[in-house]
Image 1 (spheres, rainbow, N blue to C red):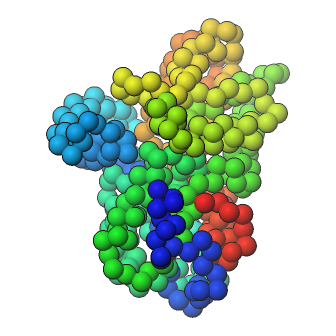
Image 2 (cartoon, one colour):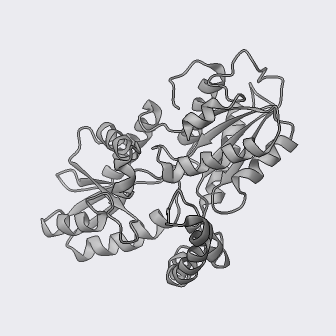
Image 3 (spheres, rainbow, N blue to C red):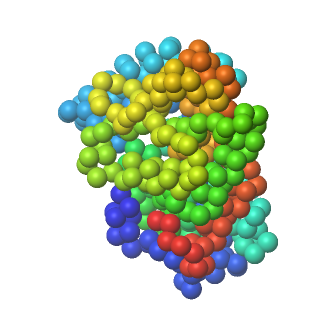
Length: 346
């Protein structure tokens, strides 16, 4: 998908020199998955998710994809409603994305007073295409597109960028754009992870450091074998962030009958408990903002499993959310992109 974007004549790797960012209107589009804000939004969210061939590619997808998505989403919505009720009735992901976008705008506003920021969600409003429409209507002449997924995979950043491709294909516009599609080994990101780990470790009173568990969203093995870089990028992130600690990497949030990346987080937590680990620090490494998979899957389900398995203290590192340090990281990556001075993060 990145290769396809680069071939678009409006793509600019580093737009410095072609655009006056200090005196012209430009925008930053933040890409994320989205999540249901109320329980009434759960089924539409799941329908959009399962309708996406980047997530599930069905035989005869042009005919079967949407009817099966309708069937699956109606059944799953009933099952997961209680999970969303347990975290307050909906996902806070859009709220965090808006706060991140507002924070980056404030961070850049002194030098770039005409910058505007827009959250764009893949499966819930405001959708990516709608966000691009708003950016165009606001008069933005250049847009920096930032994925909020540190590690690139076709199933997250890839499908979001496909929406960007579709919008530019279907809109005759002179707006140019740049892309920050992944930043799994960016020094600032690794520093944030190591800081969050150190803060969590400080909550321990044991004479021995707690075991460290990095939990990443799982991915079908078939997708990894097709050349998707996600597994290698997650592994590199964990190696850099976990240096000096006793750590293990596992994968969560699997669903369906296909083979997924292993080991599974739940199995590892049970094993650690049975092996005598008393304190465990969990790092949700592929997530930057709180949502159902941190607030329920880890904070509730995984914690209950850990305690039942013999682990006495369960600590989860804080998500970045609107942490000023995270805002500075995002703003810095954008600044490096438009000024042409930073590491290549595409």
